[in-house]
Image (cartoon, rainbow, N blue to C red; front, side, top):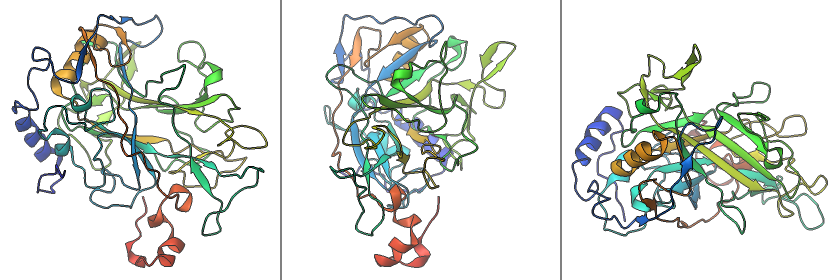
Amino acid sequence: MNMRPASSQRDPRAAAALLAGLALSPPVFADIFSERHPDLIPTAVQPAAVAPNSWRGIFRINCDFSHAAYDDPLVFPGQPDRAHYHNFYGFFDADAHTRAEDLYVALPSGQRVSSCQGNQLNRSAYWVPALLAPLYDSQGIRQLDADGEPAWKVVDAVVGNDDVAHEVFYYSAGVDNLQSIQAPPPGLSIIAGTGSTLPGAPQPTTVARWHCQSWNANDATNPDFRGFIPECRAPDRLRFDLFFPSCWNGVDLDSPDHKSHMAYPETVAGVTRCPASHPVALPRVSYHYAFGVRPDNYDPVTRSSRGWRLAADGYTVNDQNPGGYSLHGDWINGWHVEAMQALIDSCIKAAKDCHDGNLANGFRLSGTAPGNQLAQPIINQGRGAMHDPDHLFAHGFEAGSAHSR
């Protein structure tokens, strides 16, 4: 079903006005708790308070993998196949044409539209560059693709397995004053991290970081994080954390670089708060992924994640320059306003540690669901055809159509 309005205007202030109007629509913004929305499940489990020296207040959800595409609705709006290889989570229909308004179209009750817990209550779109591993055969010989170039395979993230469920997306407090945190406006769009980052100048680990799960890295006592993919040996897991800015200018749903309307909190005289330029504190969105290091994806000599790269890495990955410097992610807020306000009030402001979609008010969000989950062919190390002139010419594209990110 095509849920997109006819207009293609992307002005953020116009979108804000449109979404403000949508907030009056009963099918989308009914009283979800008293009317028992179908994506709410009663629960007697009450989340515990956050641990000392840990998160200030946090809400965690799982999202299954939805689909893959060489699309980016923020960076290349309306331009299919212009981006590097992305894995999408959440809103099933996210593609190059997706706009914030699409996430708030009225739908029949019970229709599945998201791979995340909460389904229609969380239609947010989440996407990240795919993680790739060199492809070897059973004898440990490096394989080549159809163009005679080294072949790659996608490393799947662990959402859950027999013994560990991994919460992929967090909403937490980024400032000390929990009561100052407000709900993000519907349709707010943000990019965290920088996809053009190169070796030698890594991103701050407060924004984008990697670690091996066995390191037991944490912010309080063991800040052993890297700006690149470390060599994690089987049966370990490689993990990344990506933190979005959580201070808003209070005006714009988006900005030309998808960052300037947002800022990271600052710490002044021991107090972490939002800067005067971006005074509105919002929940801090963060992505937390785990990838199993296994025989089907590890380097056959070291049995590790050696040689792994992101599809966004714009440099040659080798022993001197490991992959992963370009870690970044995108988010468009598609939360139902009541569900978002509930997680802020009952989990974040109450300094609770809410797992598995538990809203700490007697309800939890419904479960996850897969999208089509179809892999895409890996073109130009995942950078895509629009970044590979040889591939363009070989497959009949016009030379003038190439577009570099």
